[in-house]
Image 1 (spheres, helix red, strand yellow):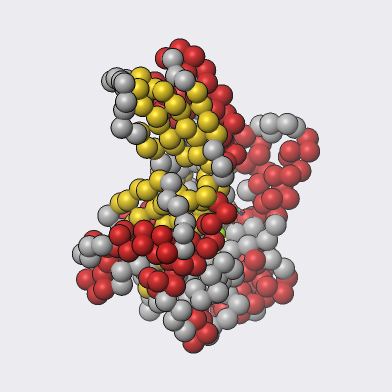
Image 2 (tube, protein in one colour):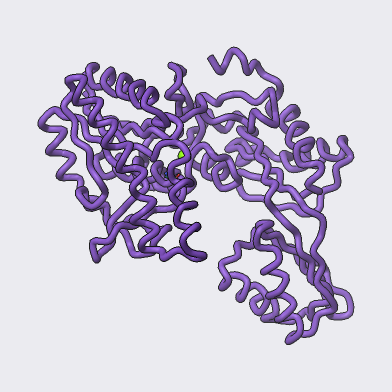
Length: 411
Ligand code: ASP
Ligand code: MG
């Protein structure tokens, strides 16, 4: 008999019919003899609807009150699922974060979990009941409602799995696993049977939406094995866990595309200690995340610096640079054409040379110009003109992963 944490996302509990289907799945697992803790998201679209209501009443809605509001979505779905399970003859109790002391700091909207008191859940499981927990929410030291950030019901599930030392954390969603690339862009993309935490972290950080980034970090830290699978079918999904030597045989596990980057170039920055800090300090203080930075070789004691930021932040970044530029004396700031970041990720890169070189060759064959490059131990990212982002992604997928047999793998 195992202890299983199952998490169901918004589309999985998006209607009364869907909640009935989830209840069937949960009760079947219970009938097999496992102890079950279920974490639910709000019904599909509900969290957005609540945020929108708030924004219709205030330009910048109060953060504490917004958390009180948006946390209700999960309360509704937790109660509905528990009502259904009880009516089916499966004793079940639903819980909100304050009842389980899912203790967080007070940063409303992006609170961090400090600790979880799992005693209450353990007691319920001992009585042979199913526990249903509202995801996404926490409670701060004052006892106030907090939320953990968008998509963070995944995090609730992993944190509970870690606290309860669960055997597995199953993430049920509307896709049947983690894919080698976004199937909407790369038709030959296929489901992976397994992927390491490290690869999944890179892919989540690079924009793969299937798992929330912080939940993968936590799963890795506490060694919680994850399975991502569809609540709409019976596929075996993708296992996410500790990488092993056999996984290094695969050179590239996934290709990602981030179309949300913009590139800024500062021309004529004096080449002396402290200037990079002067420029990037205030950008960081403004909460703007700088992704890649390149500093060119200097000529006549001056250099160019190019960096990328999320597209929505580019105006603010340029205003900041202009202001500092006036103090430190630069010759200009350029906002360049929209760019895309295309990345390949794979544990195999640790032990195989030449992966980056092959990537550059594939892009050259497509006549795609590389504007920036960044690497880590298991990732190579390039910035290209955004027009060529999808083409680059498909070409890299074809060359590194191949067409495979997507149909066979995905049933
Ligand atoms: N309902 C929350 C959101 O939409 C949390 C989640 O679904 O994971 O972001
Ligand atoms: Mg999600």
